[in-house]
Length: 256
Length: 126
Image (cartoon, rainbow over all chains, first blue to last red; front, side, top):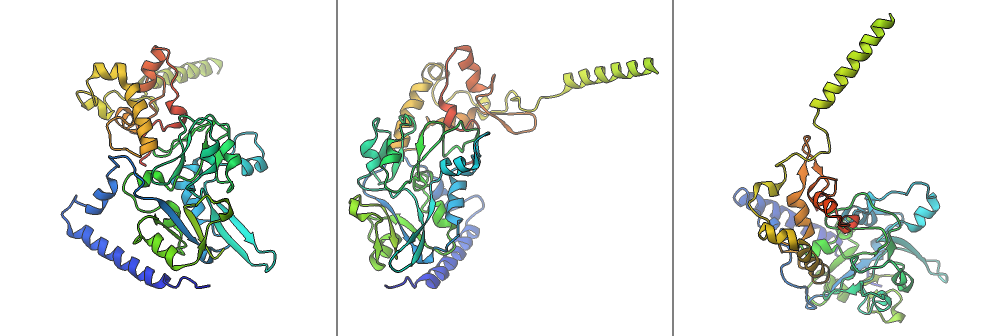
């Protein structure tokens, strides 16, 4: 198995780019920041299937016990604003609290090899959660992001049963505080959206990717052969989890 | 001794009352503190907005969720951002607080509003 060896290169490249960005920011007249203007432009036309968003997760870089991607996701999507309802037991809360990313440990029973990985919505091309939804609330956006339209979600939770990855959460209680970009309310199902608020506002990364100090997560357009994620997928052996279900997941894993 | 105690009690009560009258309550929107207060009209003429704002928002919610279009004048986040008022301390007062922009009218017209069971009632910056 070939191991990804581009980590030092990428790091230097990143540092160089960060330096270059800093220079650009200072060189341009006060108040004019080209980068931030480009990032802040909200989407004005409908998403198309010219792109399909996907992710490659290198599990060899995933340390057991590391929780960085999960906490970054919680912060980005306002999940950290939720707390245990009064009177609920700790055990129940741990079972039912919303989680868009779970850390999963896989063990090969023959060899004893243990792999840790983050498990979230796999953004399938043929999502079972969309098949079973009685109202059309669970849907796949043209750019491949599988989402819940909370305006039509009736909270039946069929999608949670149908998802082979246990990726969806249900909101059981009234919510006091939400973020403007991530509305959330009692009685609806939710899951990872590939940080859709960033996608629609010109962002190129996800919160989990930004938080990963090991660079284990590569995100991008699967249909663009030059994108970082396509290049990485072409280079390193990777698999879909439960590939036997033929869902063509958008999230793939190296060395599972 | 007893008389002194009574006097001081009266004094404390009076001071409390006076303080209460003069105090600006935290959590109460200050008139003119919303961005909208400084503008002549909303994204459409006021008369149109009064009767049709919900149609605009309902249309917008579909194209935002399903098509990802966020660059329009008709987003609920935009309503909240522009119409939210600040209290005397300068912090935002939720638009669904009784008497504030959204709740003020909806209470008067007896309309049950579901937006804010999920959506943020004041700008959160992201």
